[in-house]
Image 1: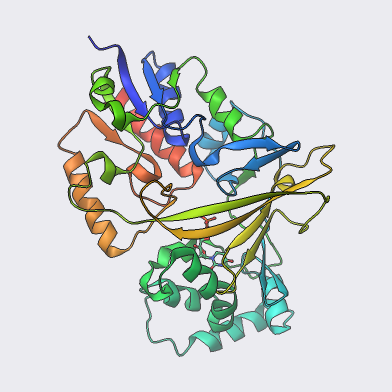
Image 2: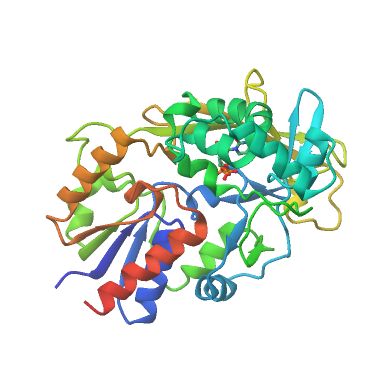
Amino acid sequence: MRQYDYLVVGAGFFGATFAKIMQENEKKCLVIDKNDFVGGLSFTQTIENIDVHRFGAHIFHTSSEEVWSFVNRFARFNSFINSPMAIYKDKVYNLPFNMNTFSKMWDVTTPEQAKKIIMEQTKNSTSTKPENLEEQAISMVGKDIYEILIKGYTEKQWGVDAKDLPAFIIKRLPVRFTYNNNYFNDKYQGIPIEGYTNLIQSMLEGIDLQLNANYFDQKEYYDQMAEKIVFTGPIDQYFGFCYGYLEYRSLDFITEVLDIENFQGNAVINYTERNIPYTRIIEHKFFNPKPNQTKTVITKEYPLAYEKDLPPYYPINNQRNNELYEKYYTLSRTIPTVLFGGRLGEYKYYNMDQAIEQAMQLARQELNP
Ligand code: UDP
């Protein structure tokens, strides 16, 4: 008899959700994480009475009743609505692409006028079915917006030509012919009032947890502790990169405390020019305003080539990598005692709610095989 039913490697949303559901079904889990904190990239830390998203903006949004009621068991959420702005050559535009953006760009006032311009700008595009991010973007919003708000941002964000990126990445963003600046279409949205770290800590209450615990440093020791393993780290790393390296995009964050009350007037401002090295600046206090925040904390987000020892933030889901992932996935199916999940374990560009949904699904499968 092993000590635990499940060893969960990684205390992010996927791992914490899986462990919570299993605990509630009388299964014993050990959660380990190489960091000295829980929550993975959603880690929040209080600086100057401001919740700082140390690894980039995390805005919780979902359309799933089940996911929303699940997270609300562990935290209270505020009513934050993400309405980022984009700056290009000192002009400010609203995101996502909506009537505010179109009227600023073309001096139009009606949806019909905006649609007409977009149609004119897309009619010469040869493909009926967009094959890459550039074609997809032009088909959604026309050439002007593509050139000003998408191309530069996308190419610095991903480090490759927009023609070499999959179309689905830009489909994350809504296009609306209304004056609605909500970045997401989901029914529920908000930021946990006590921060993401507290949310995850509360999910993990009563579950054995080891921090500063690197699975790969003591793989044999950990492997013999549990009947099954749920691994939420990079799937290629789990298999010793035996088929080659999956590619990721990484980020560097430069955070500053400023002795002023208001730096940019909004939580998120994107800088869409190619020659500005960061993609966006976040001003953390606006995610979760509290009394007595006299200073402000800002973070500039610099995209980086992924190298060993940097965190892998984004899977790069192009054809080469998806095919390579399929090989790892097939290999993973030959070891049914190890289950893979989350953004890195499944090599998918999951949002937090999607990671939770996938973990719920895996837990259900385990409980009702
Ligand atoms: N994007 C863009 N301009 C913007 C914001 C986003 O071109 O001002 C594109 C870019 O390719 C980006 C994608 O839309 O990678 C998805 O953006 P999202 O804000 O969803 O990215 P995340 O917050 O996950 O980094």
